[in-house]
Length: 282
Ligand code: ARG
Image 1 (tube, rainbow, N blue to C red):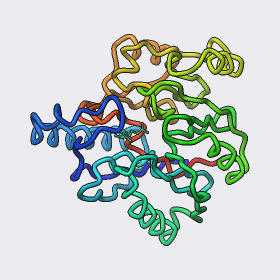
Image 2 (image 1 turned 30 degrees about the horizontal axis):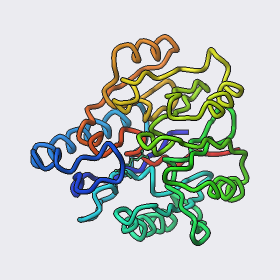
Image 3 (image 1 turned 90 degrees about the horizontal axis):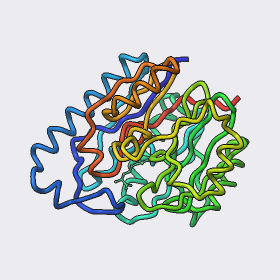
Image 4 (image 1 turned 180 degrees about the horizontal axis):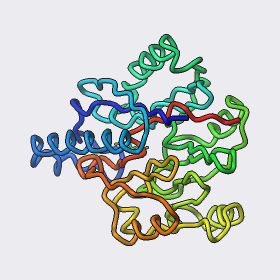
């Protein structure tokens, strides 16, 4: 089936607050116009790369005053046409919730989605940014500890009737699972071990055989290359170091690098700028 991604137009994007260690409002404010232009170029490049690789893309508008809406991966988890909308940890992003609710309602109305399943009260969960579907293994890797809370893991498993593997996040820099962990379509895992405790690293190693473990370098992680979008034999990511392209090419993947620097100033890359709408769990 053709992959389908939701993107949010970057017309209201900027870096005007800091809720993770990568965000630097002052740096943004030095060249706001240039950064906004760069964001538009990067967004267009991502959009084009997704379509070139064969995906269907739906773009919705963002909202003034909610710059991080450009990261719809955090808006919810979508499996089998059912969406579990997110609840954000920080007030800076809470305002996104009603807008994404409306976007999901429109998608139910037009048949893109079938159902909205509300997240239990009081629970924090930041969407697909902390829940990555592993197509080859048939379960989800679920992150928590920085933004999403531990209790969200069981809720995800129950809501979708799926198996989950829990991955506590132990550093502030790698605050969403998608910043430090990615599963490729054939089951290889690209990940940055220092984002996890020794125990979690051992658990990953027990599930993923050595030939399927691709250890990201500090440079790969810092350039948000782990935050990749992949389907079929295509991998799309923020401009990667040559060594990473080589490693992925050797596995038979075609890598497209896109210039996403203005989004990296907010602590995001390609994956979090998308929300995949067509994942099926069975
Ligand atoms: N500035 C955003 C935040 O801190 C970036 C989110 C990036 N999303 C992601 N899934 N990694 O919430």
